[in-house]
Image (cartoon, rainbow, N blue to C red; front, side, top):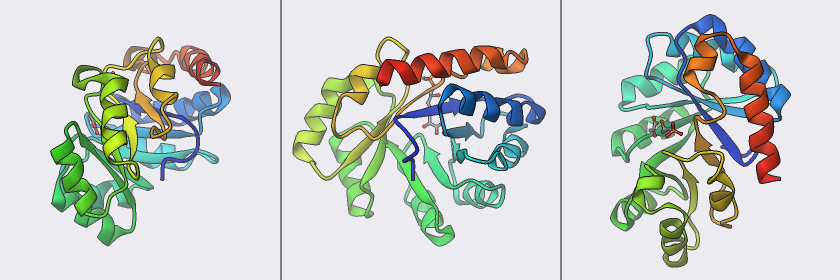
Length: 201
Ligand SMILES: O=C[C@H](O)COP(=O)(O)O
Ligand SMILES: CC(=O)C(=O)O
């Protein structure tokens, strides 16, 4: 489960060879987990490489169907994130024995996830779905649920989410800019990661 800290970098990566340096930059910046999204042709190879970085808990994001669940688990993903709630994806993750964090944005979706046995969900897209106030409102009705808010969150807002007791980790790409990774500028990733960690400390 996403339990290696209050931040979950959401990675979009264009070249698999950038994965290991990226993982080292995250660790150097104080972040010990990452989600590699299946949004690029290089994603599976990058996931495989990142999963081999010692000390980093690596999962897959943008996982949309059971075939992709098998592919990411075979590549080493230890958790699965999805933008929405799919019964098929949840079942496939159970079958493969990996944690799944599907996205929800409403009380109805949350109740569907809860009835599937989930207790941790992604709140997506967080900023445009009501932000911390919406999570606080949901948490007051469903105190057993935990949230990973993601979507549109920047360095200026992360602490507002992390301050909520129901939030287990704040997801986002602000500390792993796609352009910096593509440019091989891992110093920027390390710096932004360290700043993100310090902002939540
Ligand atoms: O997972 C959802 C989003 O892609 C995270 O990225 P964002 O922080 O740029 O919204
Ligand atoms: C957006 C999202 O939840 C994902 O890419 O998994």
